[in-house]
Structures are given as C-alpha cells and as structure tokens.
Amino acid sequence: MSNSAFVANGTGSKRPTSADGSSYCAFSNMNRRDVIELYPGDACYCAPPCTYYIGVQAWADPVSYSIVASELASPFFTLIDGLPMAGLLPQGETDQFVFTVQFPPDDPSLPPTRRVIEIIMQTYLGDADLFVTLDGRVPSPTSWDYRAIGGTGVDAIAIRASDPAFLASPCGPAVSSNGSCTISIAAYAFESSIYAIVATSGRYLQLVDGQPQTDSVDMRQYNYYRFFVGTPGQLTTFQVQPASGDPDLYCGSDANANTTVPTTARGTYLWRSITTGNEMLQVYPTDPGACAPPCSYYCAVYGYRTNASYVITAATGSAAPTRLIIGQPQADVVADQTYKRYIADFNASALTITVSECRGEPHQLAAGRQVVLMPV
Image 1 (spheres, rainbow, N blue to C red):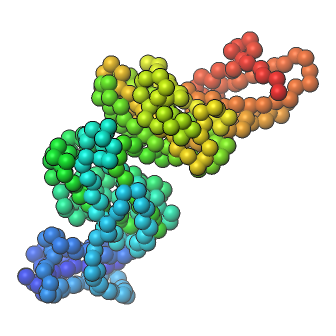
Image 2: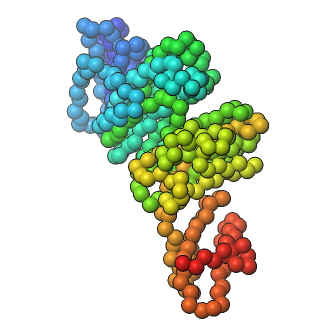
C-alpha cells in the first residue's frame, strides 16, 4: 500500500488521520486506487449543505497522487424488467441501481411465491462484482444480502420469492398483499470494468451457457429455466445432477408453443429424463423439436416423491461429428452421461474400433461391445 484516504464529515475532527480512529468515519486503503463513496443513509453521510474533510496518508515512501471530489444529482439508476443497461466503472467505484418487482405477476397462473427475480451482469473487460440488498440499505462489498463475486465473465444472482430470506425481508409482505417490492443492486469494480446488467422477474431463471446453477425444488413442485441459443447448428445439452432427492427433467422449445411451460403431462414437453440418478438431454439441430436460433429452450425440474437439491447446467457445442483418420488415435474428453460422436471412412471389410480408457469409464457404442455402425 502506498497511501490511504480518510474522511470526516465535520461533526467531529476536521483532521482525519489513521492515528486516531475517532477522527474519521470512512476510509479506503486499496493498493492502487482509493475510492470512498457516501450515500444517503450511510453513517458518514451529512445532509447538504455540509462540508467533508479528507486526509491522505503515505504509508512508506513519499508518493505523488491526484485527488478529486464529485457528486451525482441522482446516484441511483432504475432498471426496467428485461432491459439491459451498460456501464463503465473505474476501479473501486460503484454503480447503484434499484429494481421494482410488482406482485402478482402478469401471468395469473404463476403463484407469487414461484416468482424468480434474477440479476445478470456480463463483464466484458476487467472484473466487476454484484451485490444486492432487500431492505433499502445501499449494497456494497461490506453490506449485502446476496452477492456474486466471480472472476471475469458472468455474475448472476437468482432470488426466489419463496426464499426464507426474501419472505423475512421488507419485501416479504408484498408477496401476500399483491404489493410491490424494490430491491437495491450494486455493480462494484474490483478492477476497472466495462459491463452490462439486466434484471428480470417472472417464471423462468435464465441459464448461462456452461455455467452450473445450484437450486432446490419442493416435492411435486417445478422450477423453471430458460436457455437462449443464438448460434445455428449447435448441440444443446441439459444436465441435472442431484445432490439429494430425485429431481426429474422436462424440456420444450420455441419450436412448439405448447412446451414453453413443461410439466409431467404428455404434450407439454418435447424431451424428458426421469432416471433415479443424473438426468441428461441432448438436442441436436436436426431434432424435430429443436428450435431455429435465435430462440429459447424451456426446462422444468420436478421434485419427484421428495424435496430435491441439484445442480443444473445447459451448454452448447458443435453438433458435427469428429472425423477420424484411419490408424491415428484421437484424444478426447466426454462429460458424465453425455456422448461424443465420430465419423470415419472405411474401405476394408474387417473393422476394428478401440476405446482406451485414460480416466473414468468410457464405453464404445459400436458392434460387439455396444457399438452401432451407421453407414452414410
């Protein structure tokens, strides 16, 4: 650390310093860039007109620096359901948002407690984190009810209206009284970042390509998910790995409007996996039920017999088979309960196909040892 910043609001000392903890009400001691943000309701905030006093301290060698103080006419941005908003944040700074959820939802068939509130932030450059509060507090890295602090890429927070923490918060009464609830959201730049953020509420939780989502479902209830596919010709794979109970998987697509809210009833789904272990569905672009991108798939996880907890993942990949060169080994990796497909041109009458196990337990799907040869 080269320097730190300390702030006093004039109600006490006008010379804030690290030597006297009572002389300041806020401080920052980041390695590269110190930022102090004060919002209405913060302990260090003073009602205008008022004066703040700032001290900068060098920890070791003498340092040179620049300092700036600024204010925003409105420090909070309003997120509209489903409408993305982009931002650019210098390191250590925060963009604050509010998002209002109205109960009951537009869909009268969806019970209020089954509503899902989701905030997704895509970081294109840098490393931004996501924080949420339900009681009006200003969210930050030190004050939050929900957070997502992954590295680069996508940070997502899903809040079900049935969550005990949600029902116990000031938002809880809105569920039973058909009222509204406003949640507070912060995008914080751990590193200088360019990002886009979107908040939604409704029946579905949006699955992010390749990103596992941990969830739980009550007995004989459904959790609903939506997965957007933007690139044609992709293999789409859905997996549910149970941690407890026996969750089953039912999926539909935009190709059939009757399958966008899948259930156990026939005609409401295009594909299902109802084993007692891992559930897996793979949809090839040639499948009659596959939708034409850009489009969405819709999946339901059903709690069969008991409550269940699980991890659900949706991912896209190439649907084209890998061409094998005769006599040349091809190394590959296959995920649990999924398939890899290959194509090879044979001229001889005698064929030999060998799979050598490096790790796990792969099985051949061709003649003699569960192998199926399909001439093309």
